[in-house]
Amino acid sequence: MSIAAVQSGQSVYSTPYVRQDSKQAESAGTYTQGEDKVTISQEAMRRAQEAADKSSEKSKVTEQTQAASTAKEAEEEYPLEAYRAPDWYVDLFGGNTMVTAELGISWEEGQTGYQKMNAKDQRLFDEYSEIVDSYWKQGLDDAGISGTSKYWHNFLENPTTQEQVHQSVYQQLADNPRAMELMKYFNIDVGI
Image (tube, rainbow, N blue to C red; front, top):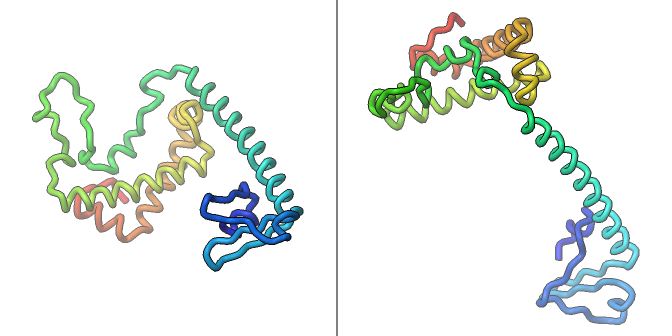
């Protein structure tokens, strides 16, 4: 039995390996396992259960709110262009993308720069991609962009917001010596 579980309001429980003993066990929860013995007053047990019940109610409301928001977003249909990345963002990968958008070509013809890299270069490019992705997400968050609707209407269709995110990402990359080193290694030149 974990004391932290009781203090945090999680459900109080016992296992088949725990025995209750003593007269105090009748008015409070006394749990013994090996040499460890924990006594929990009825008041503490009641408060822990109340806290657990309250926490459960709050989480149910939060889950319902999130589900409703996700369902609303899922009901809306967006054109394919609502999911596109701006050209300046694509340029940050210098043709080393992991997929190709070209249709009607064989798998061999569709091999991208990333797929042609050796394992070491793929690891380095993954590191670079994670840096870019973190700055991209931070820029979108700072601009209040979340969800497809906001991304499409408030970002892709709003040149001012798009430029703010663009400048934010480029500035963070310029301030990161490792990112600049990796850009040089992969011959990615976007004028930073």
